[in-house]
Length: 589
Picture 1 (cartoon, rainbow, N blue to C red):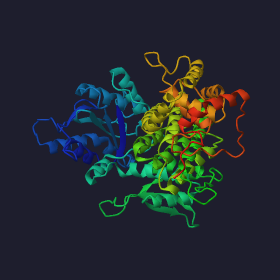
Picture 2: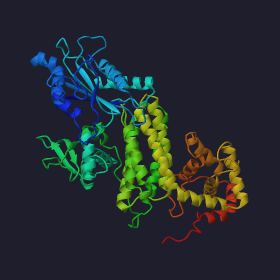
Picture 3: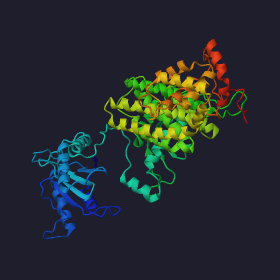
Picture 4: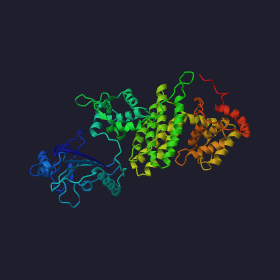
């Protein structure tokens, strides 16, 4: 049940709309379901001495405005309180009597007409559709004082939550005032009329967030907005300093032919210029990203390397969120930028789900919790690296490292849901869980080809080597990786351990390290999660076409014992079949 409150100054004009046909002939059988005394004239149903609905409408307006006229100059200029209340599409249809009860409870809870108060404001509730009513009240009491209506929206929300629980309706998550402003009905109708897939406000909000992802400076942010095709208007002080900005979609104009401008603060609370400046503070992002190797040729593996690097950063963000500290609030903002960056640079196969994940997580990035020591340099730099790698090469990374990053981001989203739930942030927790579902779908799309190749490679290993690694997996995860028939489902994991061993790692120690990195209870497929962790830890290619990752500067190579070297020699032939031995790898084209 969703209440929406507005204030206005024209009682008659609002009633004409409520009792009229609506903007799209959607108003059917408009009639009163309740009023301040139960005897208000009803233009929709009255059949008295003068059945003309216009006359009855004038009588209803006069009755509602009586106290306003008596108060004279003491009455507020915007004296009309208008609250629409809508049930969820899946809820049962409420009767007129039930809607009357809803209206009485809301005007009492908000201070319009407290229960038992003979001087409460005058109000009526109009129903012209099955799923909602409109409550219209005039904000002058019978004693000609103004009602005490502080926090009326929050009080209306709280009362709706109680009604939902008592009546068995769908229970919505309570808000905390940090959500983005929703498009108005006029904006939605305009989008339908002009053939746009969504209202301009929502398109602009997403475009601004994408321009902000990984930006290092204010000038770069505005440049990205213009490059995205938006109209940008910067408001400046006499000194020349920017005070704020407005954006508009090309071709979106009002009835006077002027662009429809939206200030950043009206798109989302954290998109105002002051809030953006806090995020773009000095030294918050590493601005150096190279897209060429030492020979000066484009490094076509750069998008993959940036995603691989971002996976490690995302792991650390998840660990901070699981720590439960309020300082992790800053990581949520960084994760939002990382999702925006990945969505912009991903191939068509995964772009839709990743974009949906980024849109959902936008709600999870905001709450009233503020981090005092907001250090987001690493995660914002990861977002910047992904943006630059994608734009520098004209494409994003297609394949294994997208799956690697998506697999980790699922766990980050679930960690964010737990972090928000622990603080009672119901809407943000729900948004985080929705994000995880979109990321799971994107992961399955990205991982299908590389995981199929890895499973084939695992099944192609000699029986002795395969059994050895299966025993290692079973010892480390005795309850995991089993099908209903009791057989192991670890072909890709076996292939990864074989490649790691051939690269000089101790498979058992590496597997234990991967398991210890984070909990696995929330993983949809434990084997898949471990495959990507192992391949990142061991610096293994994520798919046959990817070049081996470049070792990090100063990284220590794993020590290999004599027994390990003997085992590696035994596995060399099998490793060649996996395509991981440089002596058998096909030459680069």
